[in-house]
Image (cartoon, rainbow, N blue to C red; front, side):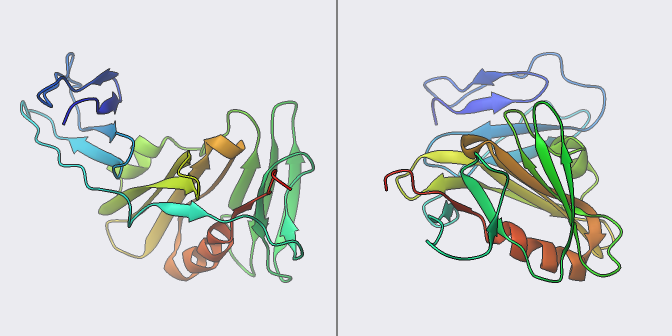
Length: 207
């Protein structure tokens, strides 16, 4: 497949025959990302000593996450001036942080010690590199985040620990200047945090 973008220690693109080269291979296991419009994005772990890779991309028409327009009423929450909003349960604990370039909400429930991080700003991203989280995972997956118009808004990546008891997730809404992430929380806490992330909606600017 031609025109597939490649991101990692090396940035490039596949040629007309779908071939690509990865110069300066790292001396340890590393992660590389493959992206092409209309296909499900694919992170791939390159093992030490591997010299040939075959990567298959799938149509993302069924896997893409379509972000809905926010309902006219509801308990959506976000800093003033941003399009991206989330629904927070009434029993959630929120700590708000603000800097010149971003605003952050740290959200927790009950005894959860690692908070869910909701970010708004021009260059927000998880506290830990996604590639590092992937390398520490037993399994992981990624999908596109899109508007119903088809516009790509970002990417949603998640994984599970080697013992299967802890999870992480990083949803980056670059097209809406926002992100949400949690790192290595128990499965039951991840389920609660996922409900918040999955409630994401965008303001309807057409109205």
